Image (cartoon, rainbow, N blue to C red; front, side):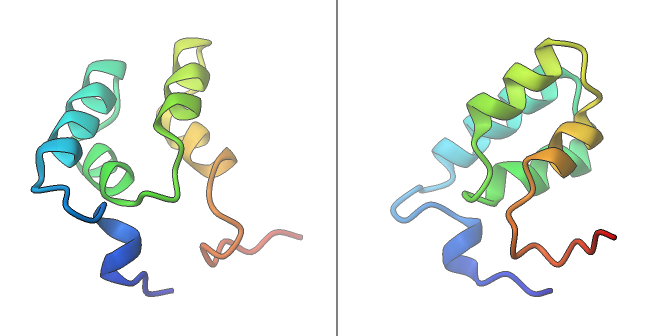
Length: 76
């Protein structure tokens, strides 16, 4: 599924907020690629991601748990 740019970058962000989100996610243990993807997608709640990771949930699983319903992820 393609995500529009408006969903990926906060309006008026100037990349400052995105860079901050990437840094927080990297500090929490996310891979560079995952941190960049999650930080740019404003549909993800950064605080909830960090809570799950802090409680021992692997970053990839935390991202799947909090994935937006329209993310194209198919479940049985």
